[in-house]
Image (cartoon, rainbow, N blue to C red; front, side):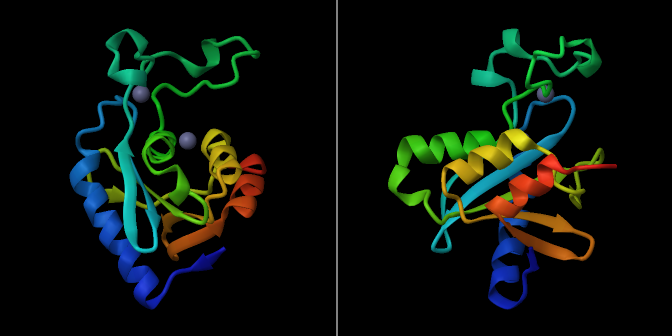
Length: 161
Ligand SMILES: [Zn+2]
Ligand SMILES: [Zn+2]
């Protein structure tokens, strides 16, 4: 992982500020997130999180994660912003995904940009790696940090509180 500086940091900040505007539309009741897939400094696709296909019938935001059977692999509620951004990038610009950069941001309870904790979402880490995305970018207290997707996937599986 590396902390971004100069132009890379400037670009990341720009995406993070954009995130703040758009993540407000996220309809997940647990958290408001936004993610953008960027290739050669250009946005390929971006999305916020909400129930799959925006269907209220699929909303699971208030389901207790402990209530699922152990065989249920995904205990999260909505389609993640990163999943969505990658799905639509794949749908619309499949040739652009390889070596793209995925930025992710979450808003706090007051809808301000929040700093990310350690990576833990293995759904998104695995998907980004499989799609040959180059880097996953999160905003930590130490600075905006880029992880290569192999490292990101390993770290996500090693997550501990
Ligand atoms: Zn949700
Ligand atoms: Zn995820």
